[in-house]
Length: 561
Image 1 (cartoon, helix red, strand yellow):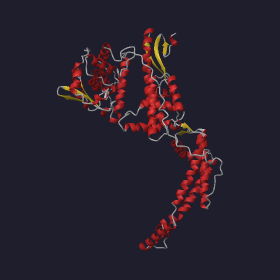
Image 2 (image 1 turned 180 degrees about the vertical axis):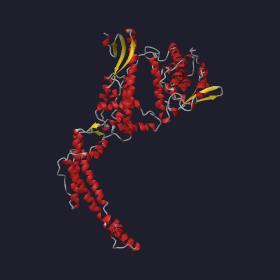
Image 3 (image 1 turned 45 degrees about the horizontal axis):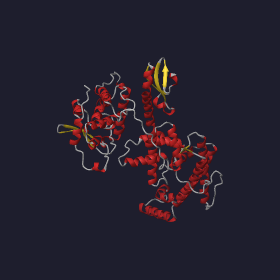
Image 4 (image 1 turned 135 degrees about the vertical axis):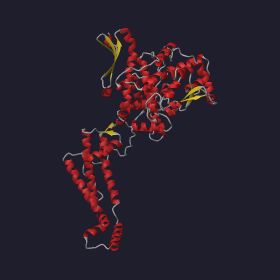
């Protein structure tokens, strides 16, 4: 029956694709499920269902990506009884250490004597009336402060002790909140505000402080041998001090920062961050020291059970964690890389059609693109941004004749187009956002791109990005990728992306096919598309604009008039 088909909804004789929204994303998306109409004919609806479900799942993935970073920061290990013991003893020990440092700073007799000499000289020099108590107090203020420092410190500790006892008796735990927050943050632990464990920890921290203050008052009397009388204030059971935890979230951020310093992961490795987030959820803690090979093998099996593709598991989930842990091991942050030998064999991919667009498919996309007009509306809030409209009109055509990655075209700036003689050339450069190889490349433009007015469009455009609204270089990459996603979604909605075709790579595959058809030199084609050379000899010499232009000019026009 129709109602039994997964993700298919039937209502009023009409068919719909339906995908449930995860609970943690419902507030962000504003719905409990996403629905896409498929029409009233069952056979057509069943054919369109997979693509529609994929579209809805991409919307959910986009919402997930926008929240992954913040949730990654908030994931911490719940506090345990062992953590209680360590926190209490550490607070007690820290207060006694602070007391020792304070006593070391008490004024010495020599310092007091020197201050007294300075006060006498000032009285004599300034002719201060010794019968005037206020004048004498002002002249000898430094002496009074130094002499009273010890007594002042003692009185402060007594007052603090009295206040702690009163607060503890009245069940007021706010004096310990700062210490609790600092300890939880330092050890990547969590104890929610208002929870019973946080209240218990606060009271025990206060009892530790009371014991420490009593020891300091005993020291005032010369007794340095006092021990805690409160049973909750005792050294942790473990003989050796535990190693400081290595929070996974901080480790990941530090690793990505080290890569970004080398010009990599400009987008902050959002896809990898999702993988790390998934691992933390699976582990139930966020301490990298506690990760074992068995943990990672079980995690891999969990990913397989979740029906994630073996390629995604190998190239995204395991690759990201392996790289992070390898870096941590190489930099002496972890004793081993537990992920080193954890692998996922990738299933052989079955191809049922061409990887790129066919002639008819390419022409259909380019006709929709070059003839595109945004929906008219009187509401400014509903109008499509000009740069999105321009991207839909020009980016598919540019990709068709350059074989470039979609994001390399959506990040183009006005200054990336130049004219050399009668030839128009675009420069694909990491300065505009990102280039996979990290190197710029110049690509001559096909005569059909120019005849359709691209050079005129660029000439009248404002300086800066042509196809996205990023205001600063730091935002260019994310904005360009956002535009790429909008183009892909638009083509999906028009049903112009066949099953088995990736809209972001279909033009690259087609460009390669056309280049082979015309017998182009593979080294030149690789240089146009930004592919690395296959052999060491490919790195010798340069591929000139003349060689590239010869290939570009040999490509046939598209009949899209």
